Length: 324
Image (cartoon, rainbow, N blue to C red):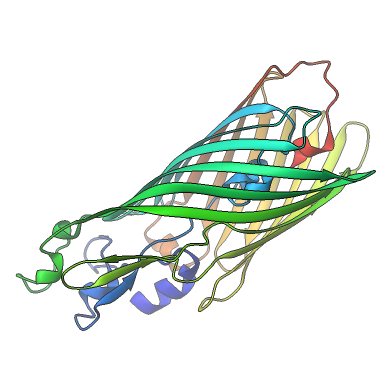
C-alpha cells in the first residue's frame, strides 16, 4: 500500500505509510531500516496558482502592474492525520510605467513530522515590445527545515536514527521567464535551483535533489463584453517521476466573479471561484476532490485565497494581466 500511495504523490516527495488501524504519517525509511539517505518534501502544491503565479514563477513579480498583498491557506486531505498544510503571505508590486517588479513571500509547509518555513524575495525585469513583453525573474531567500524525528513511533524501540530532531537553515534560489501578450501568456520556471543536504550522525536529508521544471500557458477568449474565458495548463516535471499536468478552465463575468474547474491528471478534480468584493479586495476558494486511493481516508482539500490591491480604483482600466 505504501508503494501505490507514493506513486500517486511523487511530485511532493511524500515519505509516509498508512497504518491499517489508524492514519498516522511517518517516513518510509521507518520500514526500510537499511536506508541512510532520504529526500524531504519539496515543492508545495497549489490549486489557485493561476491567480498568483509568483508562487511558482519569480518572473511574475509585478506582472499585474499593481501593489498587491495575497494570503493563501491550503488544508490538503482533510481528515487525514499529518496531511500537508500550506500557508503563505506574498507581496509584489510594479508601477504601471516601470519595467522592474519586486516581491516578498513568507510561507510554511507542514507535512507530518516535517515542516519548512521560509522567506523569499523576488525581482523581475520586463522587456517591452510593441504588443507584448518578456519578463525574467529571480528569487532568493532562506528556509528553515525541521523534522521532529523523536515523534516517530517505530516498530522497534531504541532506533538511533530517531534519537534527535533536525533543525537547519538553508539558502534558496529560483529562476523564471514569462512572455505575455494582451490575450495569451506562457511561462517557464525552476522555483528551487539549489540542492541542499543536511547531514546528521546517522543519515543525510536531501532537499530538491532534482530540479522541478514548471511550464505554464493560457489564453483569454472574449465570449462577450461581459464574459471572458481562460483555458490554461500547468506542466510539472522532475527526474524520477511522471510528468504531471493541471488542465484548467476559468470564466470571468463582468470582471467581478470568476468560476472554474481543473483536472490534475490522475490525482484530483478541482472546483474554484474568485469574487472581487471591492475594487481592492478579492477572495478565492478551491476544493480538490481526490481521485487516488487516499480518498478512502480523506474528505478532500480546501484552499482559501485573499488578495488586496492597494490604490485600485473602480474607474481604472482593467488590463488583461488581471486574468493571469
